[in-house]
Length: 181
Image 1 (tube, rainbow, N blue to C red):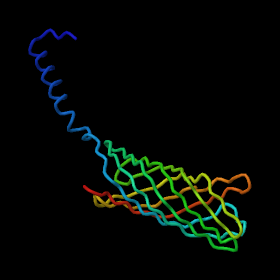
Image 2: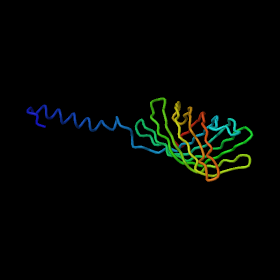
Image 3: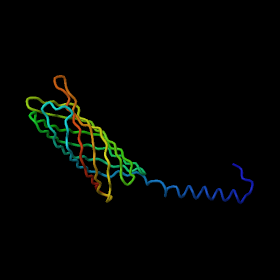
Image 4: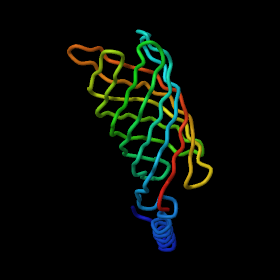
């Protein structure tokens, strides 16, 4: 680009240099992974009754949170256990891996998905197969090391050749701790 007046060229160069030097102030620092521990508790509602009543579940998650400007990515592994009431007396547990994607706007909307090994057992039958969940959460971080929120997710364990899948909806809450800040 050609600027006819030399003073104007110097001003444009100085402004461009200043903008280039100030850019790091407006962009997030280099992403650093922070260890993250999550504890979940929820009410479980089976999709099919088949002798099942509502239950209660809890879970633990461990991962690394990557802060990229306002985006948070958390690859994680987890374990959860669920106990349903009723004559079928179903219990289920899962070992899963997956992740969370959130946008930190003070209140943080999150979507997540996990898959891994799941097992359920009921009176007279059991199955071990693919365990999965897909859900959404809304978190609030008050202190940099503690966040909490509510979640809803569709959870299940796939069926096998001789057994049906077992699926449920979980509505609950969770708390997360950022470790080693």
